[in-house]
Length: 246
Image 1 (cartoon, rainbow, N blue to C red):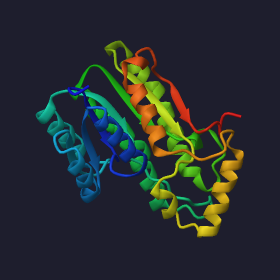
Image 2: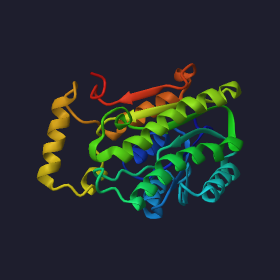
Image 3: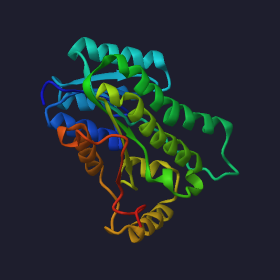
């Protein structure tokens, strides 16, 4: 796989970091687009020969264009695009501000759309595009109503992109993670006891009896990007321990 090139947004923390490192360990060249340059450098130090890093705003087509151009100049065409960058802001319907609403839309929906659109002129034949959605796209989301709506939009984009790009041999799929153990769980502002209670409830409602690990989402992405998934497009692979399936 040493000649294959992956471009991922939000690939420097949580699920995105796990995906980046999974592909790097499997011999891919990985270009990471994110805001935190320092965290990207930590990845680059581990895999200096196979990592390109770019700091930018995923809602800026100028930044995305420059990112893909740098990737192309270093390695040539891109084989896999993973639109992972996203934001989750827990707010109930009464407290959602216009500012936070716009932030979610700009990153989770606009960012994903233009991550894909801007990449198209740089893609190799038989490329694979993977969009990170969420099981909140299909559930009553409560304090995640805006987040869930943006992720439902991402799921819809996977269908539309698959239809539009299929005649070029480009596959487009979504991955919908369930609750996953990442640092972001501690950044939502929940009291520690409340977070513990929430995770216990999720665990109890999950058929496999636990929450997910980032590496499990990463392995799903690796599969969808591989030849083993060569006849899969427009699909939503739900990696959630069965939480949203029953």
